[in-house]
Length: 124
Image (cartoon, rainbow, N blue to C red):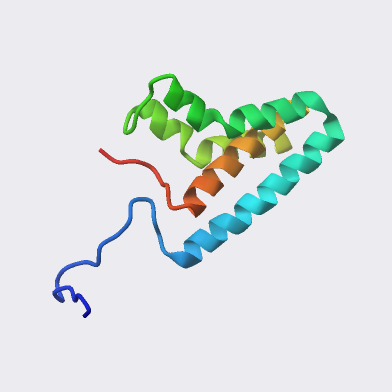
């Protein structure tokens, strides 16, 4: 037995979904970013490893601190643009501090992993 939707109704969507092609792309990005973070951590040592791990856990840490969706802080922690700006700013800026770069890598890796698993931004 199949269920059909009326022609004028949109098909049901999963929150933060986006279909398999999008999830595969996010998964490939997550693997690349994780490998890059491990490479940088091996290259620069313990401070970079700690920064990557702390920022990888940032969404969980904010949730443990009592921040719940759809608050502004929860939305900010789960946006792609913030860690991306950190990475691009570090790459082209005058600051030379590797833990900042690996923190951005860890954060972006977590966001990519969440999007791969179908957990996008929560809405009101």
